[in-house]
Length: 252
Image (cartoon, rainbow, N blue to C red; front, side, top):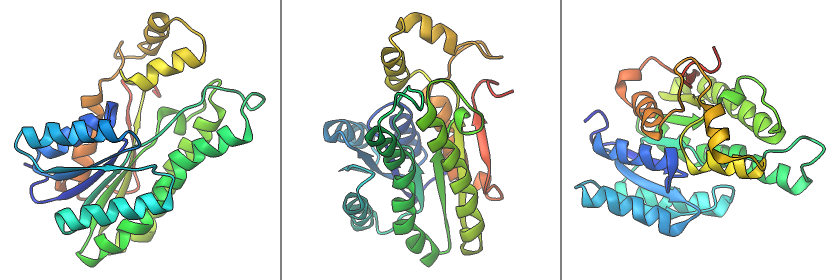
């Protein structure tokens, strides 16, 4: 029960890595606000947690919306009394080159992947600082640490996430707030399968290529969740400003 008594917000919590992390945090004793643009998906995950004996609320939101983020944080504070942990996980990908992507698509990728973190942190940092600290974990990517093909907006946005994380860690360490990024490689999620569709590639061949890394397989959402729970917990009490790769050795 490494997160016993903690109140957490998980964005993109309706599926994939977000769902796995919301469930893992609840299993470690956290009360969880499950945030997703898909209200039904958020509710299903919150119901899973409560059915297992945990405490959770569903908080449907577009994480790029200032008003929605304010409402999410207010709902979490009303339900749980405070916010101790935030996992800024919501994200989207567009598999294009700079020649192919529209201005609207570029802006949407940055709105969901980067602006959302700014909006969330602006709301939760004062809350965390008021009670002595907290932990913020942001989802970067292996492609936030190095480049990748036909994903120009995604690579740029995830690079921004990694360095935004470092800047937040510097600013708010004195307030007892730790800020880290977790940087997955290819993970067995619907988002990964959607990439194959965007690229007009056979899904099985695409997934086989995703397994081409030292450990010889894709990651599972639960494996990323385990890393996030560790970063959220006091086991990582001296870890801040880090960019933790959880990628089966892909960047190596």
